[in-house]
Length: 289
Length: 302
Image 1: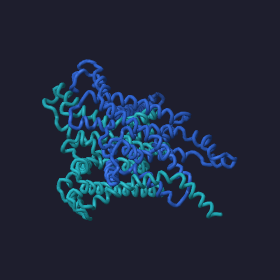
Image 2: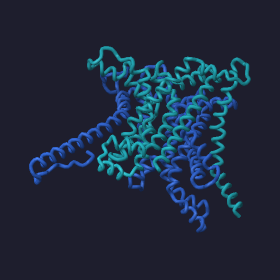
Image 3: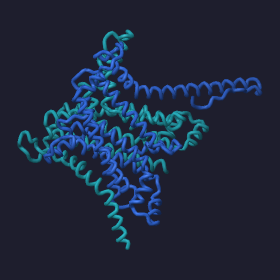
Image 4: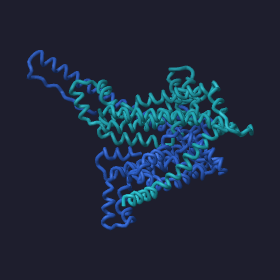
């Protein structure tokens, strides 16, 4: 009987999950396996074939790529820190202090994410360009005599635009975990004489930590693989590893090196996801005890 | 605007104590006012950063000058005329809409199936299934795009709008699964079981119990899936071959060119449609629910 029942459950589960699983195994896992395989095969342009580590050595020995990797980590980290600095207070205000403005503000936050990302990057390019509106305005006001070139085609521009692009995904999980905090706790902390800083450090941040780790997974990881934003506003100093991958694959046809760099990015993503996940688990246990 | 302001009225206290209490209360009131002001300023600052550039983009779509710069040179609709006469742009828009229209129902189906399989049963591989379904939401789209390009090449499948649509399904239906799972997790499976016990056929359970319960989540999912596909740049970039979608058109137009008012015009039109769609989705998701926590939870499902 029991076996029959588990057998039937198995059939019913299969009826639901079979098609999504097959789709993902073929079209998601499949391509990842092909990247992995391509990264270990000698470039087909030279016609040699055979297994090799050459692609990895080329990718990781080239000082340019190593420098770009470092730059990518810097840009991603600075963007992430900028977003956390905005998202933590924003999540707090939305969850506890916005009153009737809470839902309209959330709607505006979600809406800004649903608008076309390339259009948003373009809107910032209009502002930041050499002849962009910020330079124009500053010059018209007589504050500067020549346009500030650093605004566009720089790492600063990339950090600004990436931070704006990903702020929704950073804020929503943090807001959600703060929303789960009992407001009475905050009141109690206030009554016991804790200032805002203490309340944040001892109460809000620890309790909202799971949300912070979720936003790290959702945002910090994809930041490493950005290439549209740096291509449009980054210039040479805001050049990221995603741009190298895109160039190697699409422009140079150098699939081996492109794949090797992709695998490096994939491993990095996995590592970051694992660390964030472990930290969030550890943290939950820590809070519970 | 937020927080209480209490005016001190310590007339009955005597002498020095009254003065001290009054000044303390005044200090608290003053502080609360500064804090309230700071909160409003911060929220407005965030909104300005999110929407300020887009407002300027709209303003300059009406500016009668090919150069996007101050001062404003008078209003015109000619950029809109040019945009709507641009054959390549129209084709890109049409492609994006067709792809999104094809992708959305497939995502709803696959996402709902996956959501049921993950939330409604207990079995050994459940964690693995949930992990696999969630993975495309974590793996960067650049890598999914590169992988798909190499994968289709390996299989000698030529790149086209079809390959774009297939890959959009792969990276979008997990979002639908997440939204629908969040909804399913909050609605009691005993309703379905009760209906079955009372002799309802599975199709009737679906028609009278499941679909009405899921309708808001499905409506929200449909709009999100459509806009994820329509907006997708990274995956389309690697899988489209010689075809253009709207984000690809914007990118290729701007990659090696100056800023162009035509781009402002078409971006304004597209954004206007998206604003309407998201507001409608929001209304559908929050219909029938009055408590704002519940609405918020519904949205957070996505």
